[in-house]
Amino acid sequence: MILIFAIGLTCLSSALKAQSSRPATDASPTLAGQTFLTSPGEQWKLLWHDEFDGPTLDASKWTIGLAWRGDDGTRRHHSRDYASCITDDNIVLRNGMLQLLTQRRDVTGANNAVYHFTEGFIQTAGKFEYTYGYCEVRVKVPADDGPGLWPAFWMLSKGWPPESDVAEFWTGRPEPHTHQGFAFRDDNGKVKWESIHKDQIEPGFHTFGMEWGAGYQIFNRDGVVTLSVHNPRVPATPMYLILNSGVASKPAPTAQTKFPNAFVVDYVRVYARPADTSTQPTK
Image (cartoon, rainbow, N blue to C red; front, side, top):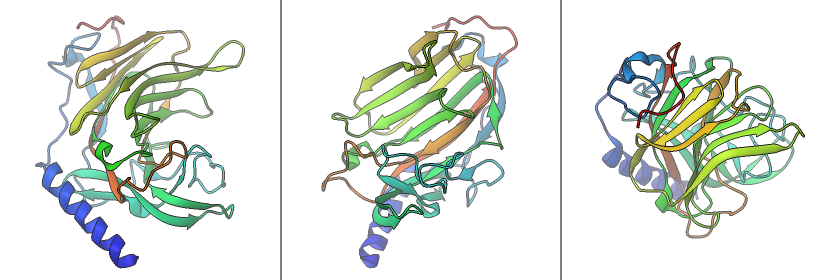
């Protein structure tokens, strides 16, 4: 089993190297030229970013594991919705890319529960949090590796909700699709969503972004606005960033799901919101 796993991981790494290699680049200092924003891109200044060009994860920016205790108290398992447990070896930096792996293997949690899959999970709680701005990620989803995979780029604050999902993916349920939007609690205490689901996950790399200001969020995919929300329940508190691969409990992977697989991240960038903007996209 160890030899088979090593061969599989080597093949995965070789394939990712062939299709994902790029020269190291620095993030643009502004969003100049981007027309989907509520104000000229030149006014949006780079606030925080990670290009994943180093040999290892930057511990000054990211922490491995949940920012909350999780259901086993060790910050390594989200909830019953996830069939995967978080392990450090699922976080790999190579060729200027972050690879968040999922693997089919048994891990026993602190609560003696046995998880049949593992995932990668990193977050910026206590290291980087922001209120209002524009965040963007460039990613490649393992959409062709079979059902049951659940990677995402999302944001949380202390407590839940709110939650903002900039780019969430299911490779099943029952068809592959993406999700963007946010969760909030209404006057009756019920959790509700302002969000959009889009069928299918296109192959290759894509950018997903979210502009966030007082009372609004505007989501885009490859620079095209997908959802504009104007709602007083839009989060108004500092939120931290989360990137994770993951395996869903329902729908679970099948025998056809390929392991190991990778949620590949080229970069994460956050730009500061200008002091005075409208809340309507210019395109």
